[in-house]
Image (cartoon, rainbow, N blue to C red; front, side, top):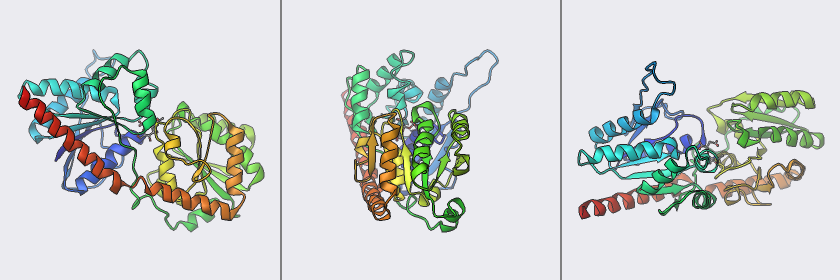
Length: 382
Ligand code: GMT
């Protein structure tokens, strides 16, 4: 197949899923064209089946806000026509699904009928999308997509709840490449961070409000009073400065390291004993799955799709959003006994294997084929 993938090229979960999916499809012999405004973060190598088309945005002085959606739609028309794509797969509804709809209409005037699959990732529905500013456009472009997928049962239900959806939504959960995300021998790194065999706790996110990163600091403060431990805060974003200030206020700076954005997350996870994800809302929790694949149990909130991933008392624990005491108690319970910690680590890996890329990739391929076939039948009826 010749597939066009539209995504945000940043470190965010939707961009990571889109890029990893595109790479895996290319490995399987499909031709994959990424169409976005800059090179996706994890697409930094050559492959004969991978192509990148940059959406250039004109900086004309009249524009207070450059019309990215129009630029993207125009680029989609160009790439679909000249690369003879079979399908467009857009990740994150805003503004990708509506740009794809516009491109589809323009392409129809050339006699080209391109099927569009939209994947809903989370905040495009739960936060930004349901806001009145975008709701009509999001509703319309979901309903106009030839195929729609959501990354968890919870996100599917939330989409039906918040929007007037008249189309089917297929759940295809996030996946993990276990070749990349697996325990790496990084003992020297572990010794440097925890020279006295302290336990290592980790949080990775984009430090947006929705991640409740300051809860991580409060949980760690309580935990470190009972168990000698170190905290690694990985990533960057608006709440990082608040977390740094909170560490100073609580007097725990010497046990907390802010590592900023990191490419080799799997190496950091490989030295970690516990992952904290106290998010306010989380449609799936890809970062938690990455941790579990590296044998790291998860203390999370019980919001959104997290109960579909983290198994209570098996791979970690889930608490109500904001229940810092409960999360700290569970963290201590896991870390205070090495044999228990090892059981949780084994369970985390076992669970992660259920989301192996090799299981999910054929599901996407079959779904693409189904949508292409359905579109062909619809075209022949015109
Ligand atoms: O929240 C993020 O880290 C970014 C966001 C995105 O769309 O870029 O992630 C969402 O998509 C991920 C991949 O499908 C999911 O695993 C995350 O749970 C989801 N984030 C939220 O729902 C807050």
